[in-house]
Amino acid sequence: MEEAKGAVKHVLLVKFKEGVSESEIDQLIKDYANLVNLIDPMESFHWGKDVSIENLHQGFTHIFESSFKSTEAVAEYVAHPAHVEFANLFLSHLEKIIVFDYKPTTVRV
Image 1: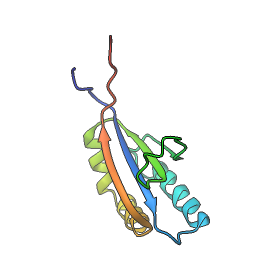
Image 2 (image 1 turned 45 degrees about the horizontal axis):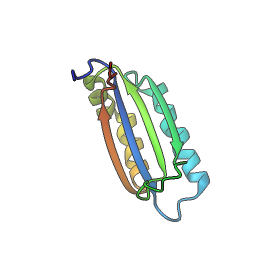
Image 3 (image 1 turned 180 degrees about the vertical axis):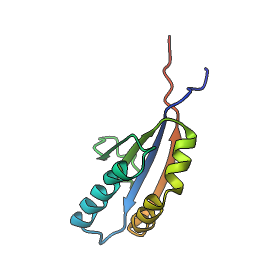
């Protein structure tokens, strides 16, 4: 299969530390979502909580997904001062995290 060109999805799976309140999580999510207004290369932001019945989440409770036009745009986002400031705050509330960037690929059969 040929690797997709262009668009990149930036995905985080996270588990918040015990003791982080729902109101703190809500504020962190609002702050994360606001990055789309502060950092031009960030095109969109979505998030959600695990709702799977398979119980294979390995303790991860939330997912966050941002869209970018290219890997270069992701790099610009990661280096942006607003992201750096937010990431330092966000990471301090997490027990564990996985970050995964990928290019969505359509399979034609």
